[in-house]
Image (cartoon, rainbow, N blue to C red; front, top):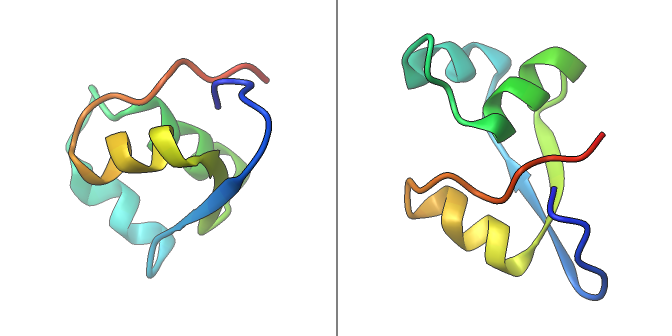
Length: 63
């Protein structure tokens, strides 16, 4: 998401429907990307993964 290189982690959700429970229209970038790609996992750096789990907006995604 942030273009950092090095160690990566995988953020995973149980089911795609869980992305809708995050509230709309202000879903975090990572949730929008996962929904758009229809994927239950997203590869991120450790910092972004920590931010996601802390409920903060992770770095901007570059596609």
